[in-house]
Length: 239
Picture 1 (cartoon, rainbow, N blue to C red):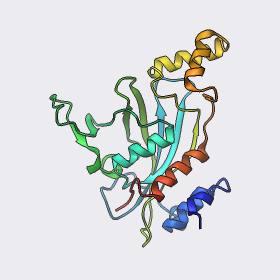
Picture 2: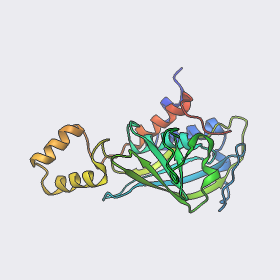
Picture 3: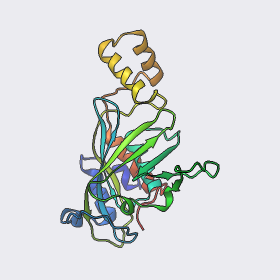
């Protein structure tokens, strides 16, 4: 039989229903109470709602993501890549209260730039409701994302609890990788509006792919990708 994530998108709320089914959280999430403090717990789940915004581009490119607060930063990285639409072909790091989290490089030891191992830290250890941090992708193009914790809810653990993640909403497509950072991509958007048939605009569209649409965000495809990562245990969320 086909795995559940393949039929979980037959209705607009299909993924949420599938997530509730495999975790038993449908009732507990609906009746959960909000907490303003984070908990560094590996065994007790909590439900985080975060907003991710790509900085330096107008109109705003953003996503709203629901996930288990026990998500490690390395798993959060993969969820962000899928949610935004990046190709995960460049380095990344999180910046939280003047500390850097990512994949440590033993050859890079400059004072003040120590990178802590992202695999050792969980979302609910580092961020409380209302907190924000920066996620930097591609040190060359410098795509900066602001992550804001919009809400935290307590949920009851269940025997099948394995953690969930899904995207509730978002707007506009992620830029293609290597598009020249926020400045380069903003120039393209401005040219697309002012001179849609110009040579530079045409060249960019041919490079990005003629089917690239900066206004399109496919939430269903994004959630299918995240569900597939969880189903195949390419990433792990939970205890």
